Length: 443
Ligand code: HEC
Ligand code: HEC
Ligand code: HEC
Ligand code: HEC
Ligand code: HEC
Ligand code: HEC
Ligand code: HEC
Ligand code: HEC
Image (cartoon, rainbow, N blue to C red; front, side, top):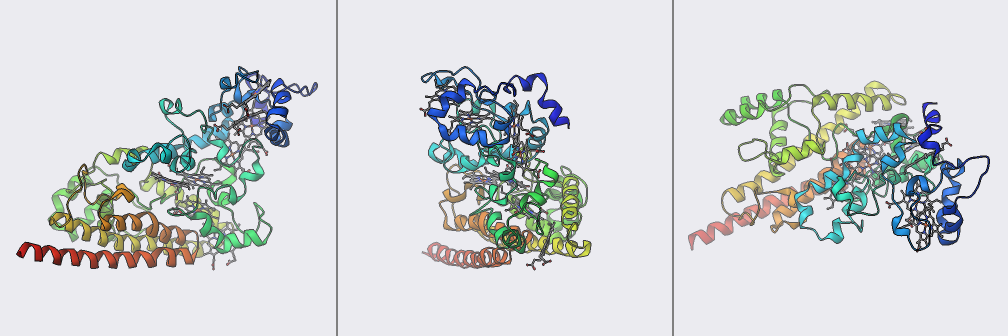
């Protein structure tokens, strides 16, 4: 109702053609010849049918066949005039941060423009769902609309956005194959067999992640299944590692207090997580936060206990609509255990490589502040760092994401199995390098 009222507000109606006259705008008249496909698609959608004009999103400064450079392109602020609720929700969610997050990766600065720039062929093609800082946006004529990620132009359809396939061009592949995992889970299979209905017997991505159509997407564990260690987590570690007391007390003083529901606070897990944070250069040699922490917090890559618990409860409530509480609780515990097991293996691998750097067997590459530094991804000169990157972004991701999306094949054969295999390879290779190093020392 509120939305309907807003649509008839003075701002909005300025862009809507008077229904009574049904006059074709000059834009449509000419574009029926120039780009007939666009006009047809637009008029087949609800906005076209409601009489919204092309000028609502592109302005009216361009009116001839030659001055089309004057046409403007929309951002969510353009849509906000008529859809304030969705824009507000979207801005509060993680999609809006997609651009900032990808540009925060140190390796992005070393890639050619063709890979990360305005052609939208790789990282930028998926991450354009996020908002660009104004000074960056000025260099990108196209691709600032964000909302068209799920409601593609020019139909801007709700029906399209309700299908899991609308997410699948981005949520797929190497480090986040949610689409493939969903497709190979009973949920996705039932959705398919039962005629791909948005509110059928099995849940869609949207049912779980955009409840009641809320545009604010965010999950408890997040993309990387990292979370902020609590004060209590870190202090408990002192009992197990008293030699680190000074560093741990200093770290604990900077952390939030609290408790993560569902998760066990085994100090070994806290230790493994600290090693992983060192591996990505967020904690330094002395376990103190580095300058990277600010970026991690700005892009909201990790959550603290308060936010985690709230999101976890909300997600479980979605599951309770179709399953029993104890059943679901056991499912979440089981998936959390996968994160824990994967973290332990990953930490072992990081420590093995770190020891090689500490002992001078591997040399820190020029310009690197930390070593190993997994955030250099595929640009790392060492074979062992390359393997750490694969564990981090491919195997560990698949193991934990597969567990939550109930795809046993992804969890095990594409996740856990290559993870374990790679850890063994790293240990073996490290042993060889160490032996070789000792031989060279003797000579
Ligand atoms: C007299 C014909 C004509 C009229 C009137 C017209 N356009 Fe265009 N428009 C064009 C042509 C020609 C192009 C270039 C398209 C091409 O070469 O494929 C264009 C391009 C565009 C583009 C793409 C620009 C780009 O850089 O990619 C947009 C957006 C656009 N028009 C919107 C509008 C809107 C909105 C109106 C009404 C306010 C309008 N047009 C009126 C002929 C027209
Ligand atoms: C001038 C007002 C106006 C602007 C600006 C506007 N819209 Fe709309 N939008 C409407 C109207 C009117 C409807 C039809 C509502 C209805 O029929 O219930 C609508 C409907 C929609 C729908 C629902 C379509 C469906 O299949 O039910 C989507 C999605 C949508 N708009 C997306 C957008 C996006 C994205 C933008 C910005 C790029 C945008 N709108 C800008 C007025 C506007
Ligand atoms: C154009 C690409 C694109 C499409 C389409 C897309 N997403 Fe995303 N999604 C992203 C990117 C990029 C991020 C990471 C944003 C960030 O956190 O910086 C993301 C993040 C998310 C997150 C947050 C994960 C976290 O860190 O907590 C959820 C949940 C999500 N998307 C669900 C969906 C769903 C459901 C759909 C379909 C209805 C969808 N997305 C469609 C690109 C896309
Ligand atoms: C196929 C589309 C796609 C490509 C290509 C892509 N990403 Fe992403 N990226 C996503 C999606 C989707 C997410 C969110 C996945 C999730 O939460 O599981 C994401 C998440 C991220 C995140 C984590 C955001 C957060 O807050 O958790 C970072 C950082 C990131 N991507 C960087 C990059 C970089 C750098 C590149 C290029 C080297 C890249 N991405 C290429 C789709 C893509
Ligand atoms: C609700 C907003 C909205 C309305 C209304 C709208 N467009 Fe667009 N238009 C977009 C978006 C979003 C893009 C993609 C822009 C980008 O890549 O940044 C786009 C892109 C375009 C392009 C260039 C890209 C391409 O695919 O060729 C043309 C031409 C265009 N629109 C013409 C029109 C015409 C003609 C109308 C009216 C029939 C119209 N638009 C109505 C939002 C809108
Ligand atoms: C990640 C995919 C995704 C993105 C991005 C997205 N939407 Fe949506 N949108 C949806 C889904 C799914 C629905 C259907 C919700 C429902 O009713 O179940 C929807 C519904 C809508 C509706 C119809 C609401 C109604 O009650 O009929 C409007 C309007 C809309 N979106 C506008 C926007 C605007 C504006 C943006 C950009 C700020 C945007 N959407 C970005 C997925 C998306
Ligand atoms: C049955 C509900 C459900 C469905 C259906 C579902 N997800 Fe998820 N999704 C989850 C749960 C549960 C998590 C992990 C929550 C947590 O962090 O505790 C999750 C996590 C995510 C994340 C964060 C990274 C990760 O994978 O753990 C993204 C992104 C995501 N889902 C996208 C999608 C997309 C896209 C689809 C559809 C192709 C989808 N999900 C289908 C429940 C669902
Ligand atoms: C809209 C209803 C619905 C929702 C919501 C839902 N499920 Fe399901 N789920 C089903 C149906 C139907 C099946 C198939 C019948 C069965 O095995 O119980 C299923 C099956 C499962 C299975 C068994 C899969 C297998 O391969 O044996 C698990 C585990 C599961 N769901 C977990 C979850 C979790 C976790 C959530 C929330 C994140 C969730 N479900 C949300 C409907 C739902």
